[in-house]
Image 1 (cartoon, rainbow, N blue to C red):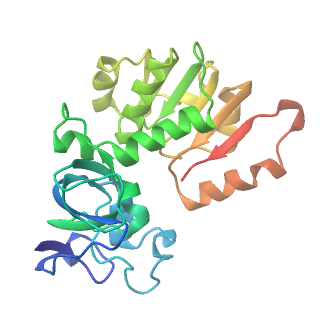
Image 2 (cartoon, rainbow, N blue to C red; image 1 turned 90 degrees about the vertical axis):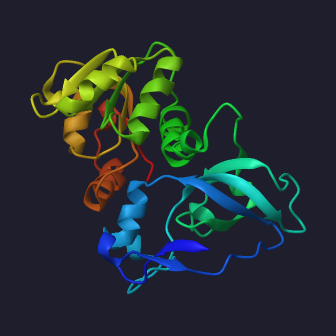
Length: 268
């Protein structure tokens, strides 16, 4: 089979299209013929080995030689202990936790990483869902505990996680403000944003608007900036950002003012 392989950190120039053996599924795995695969920022981080956190699996060279986490395809063969999938099933899922390998014609995956693809969706539509949609759902529902009627701000709303978050928040009856660049504002309005802010023209942390929940996809501002626009019992959930900012938020509970307690959650 053909696969996009790399054996050292770098940019796209280190990727090589090679012929490799088709893998054989283990007892709890299925062999999937990949029909579509999406590219996420995580793939880009692992390819470059940046930030340094991306090298935890392999300090000097990549741990996984074939990237690609979000896949959609058809089951070709199954291991003897597979219980829920059959050859011919159309499936999709995030395979990052069981070895990556989506940038290939075939990949072996633990059955628990996959869900049946709805027949109404194309393979391309299905493969756009796993990482981005799950992060958005976890950030809003699991960590943010979103409630109907709340005010929500999404910083970096025009990307994969942000656009899913906007739709999920609106389905929950929230009033949503989206922050992104000029070229994405019309799209966000068309998707249902109640308000949009162009960060190249306005500082959203200095507007006199306050939010029950902030979902931060890009991590571009400081703790004090976000505290200024959170309601007294508001919540901030981070799903993307630099290591330095993540560290700042992880240490924030040691220094926060107890009289103005706000909940900080980091999801990375």
